[in-house]
Image 1: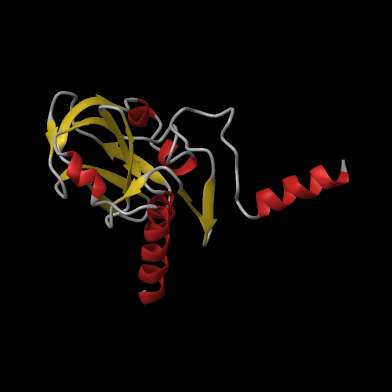
Image 2: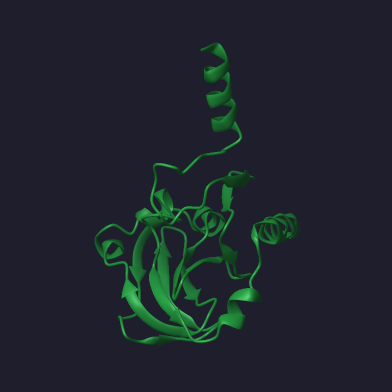
Amino acid sequence: MALRMWASSTANALKLSSSASKSHILPAFSISRCFSSVLEGLKYANSHEWVKHDGSVATIGITDHAQDHLGEVVFVELPEANSSVSKEKSFGAVESVKATSEILSPISGEVIEVNTKLTESPGLINSSPYEDGWMIKVKPSSPAELEALMGPKEYTKFCEDEDAAH
């Protein structure tokens, strides 16, 4: 019993979590550094968006690192379903108490679904950036664009380097 409590508290302190009982969007484990989570199984853009590719659908949102730097999100502007997005072009905006930031698409494709929950509850981006705070689902038009994105280790290093430079 004491060992289980120690393991649980250690996992919490290290920000490690198992998602066996959580949403199908989350991969099995997450890595956390500098209080921001970077999840295994996702791809990352240098503009701080994440992509989860599952079959013919790619789910896109902003990273925990990005939402942490933005602060409390109070408004989200997203595209309509059946519109198209282009790699490194704006598809919407996130307004926080600190600033308004454009959201750049990490890949090109057709928007097949928009997270309408964010209209009424934009704070989901803060509380659940990788689960309930996803933004759009896209049918990718160029699978090679997915391969060009960073993996979790590369993104973690990118964030550490970027934060050190500021």
